[in-house]
Amino acid sequence: MSITSEVMSPPQQRRYDGAMERQASVGSLLRDWRQRRRMSQLELAIEAEVSTRHLSFVETGRARPSRSLLLHLGELLELPLRERNRMLLAGGYSPEYPEHRLSEPALANALDAVRRLLDAHDPYPALAVDRHWNLLLANPAAQRLMQGVAPELLHPRPNVLRLTLHPDGLASAIIDLDSWRRHLLARLRRLLAQTDDPELAALHDELSTYPPPSGESPPALDPAQIGPDPLATPHPDIVLPLRLRSPAGELALFATLTVFGTPTDITLSELAIESFFPADPETAERLRQLAR
Image 1 (tube, helix red, strand yellow):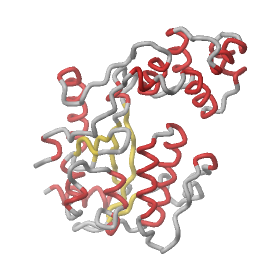
Image 2 (cartoon, rainbow, N blue to C red):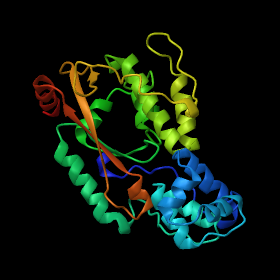
Image 3 (cartoon, rainbow, N blue to C red):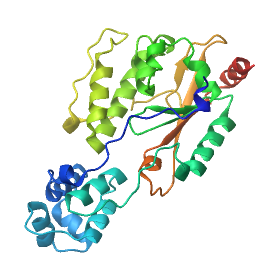
Image 4 (cartoon, rainbow, N blue to C red):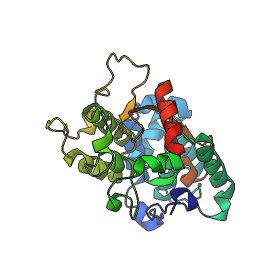
C-alpha cells in the first residue's frame, strides 16, 4: 500500500485530563519553561508587563494567574500549543487549542495541502512527520528510498529517525553514516532541550544504542550541556548533504523543513514537511531515472 494513499496513524496522543495535569502546579511549569528559555523573572515580568513580585507569587503558588496571563506568558515563552494547554489545565482552566487527527474532516483542507506539496515535489523525496518524527505521509520518491529496509521498521508506525539510523534501515545505504548519525543525534538533543519531551528522550536513548559505523561510543545524553552540532565546522558544501547509495548511483541531497504558519490546532502545529533536493545535477538526473 502506498504510504500516500492513507495517513499513517500517529501514536494515540495523550488527551489532557484536568485532575492529572494539576498534579504539576502551574507555578512549577511556568518556572521550568522560563528557565528553559534562559529568562530571569525580571526579564519575563518586563515582557509580560506584570510586576516581578506577582510573577514570583505565581511561580511559588501564592497567587493564581488569570487565564489571559497564562496565554500571554505561553506566547512570550514561545511554548508549543500542547504545553500551553497543559499550563492552562494546571491553572484550573479549560484548554484553548483543539487537537484533531489529521484524517478528521476538520483538517481536510490542511491534509489536502500537505498531499499537494508532497506530490508536487516528486521525483524528489518529501515526507510529513509529527513532533516525534513519526512518518505520516511520504511521496513516491521517498518511498523508493525506503525500499529494502526491514519490514518491521515500517510497521506499525515508521519513525524517520529510526529508519535512517537503524542497521536494518537506511544506515547501510548512507555513505557518510558517521557524520550523518552525529548530526541527527545532535539535532535530536537540541529538540529535547527545547521541549523536555520524554518520548524524544526515549528515542534518543534508543538511537544511541545503534552501533556507530566507526565503533565509537555515542555521547551520553546531557540536555544541560548540549553543545553545538558536531558538524558545525567548516564544510566544503553550503549545506550538509545526505549521501546515499541507490540503484541509479550515488545521491547527494539537502533538506528543507516546512511548517504551517500560525496554526491553532495542536496536530498542525506539530506537523512538519521535510523536502529533499538534489545537491548536484547528477543527483537530479538519477532521481528522475529512479522515477521511470
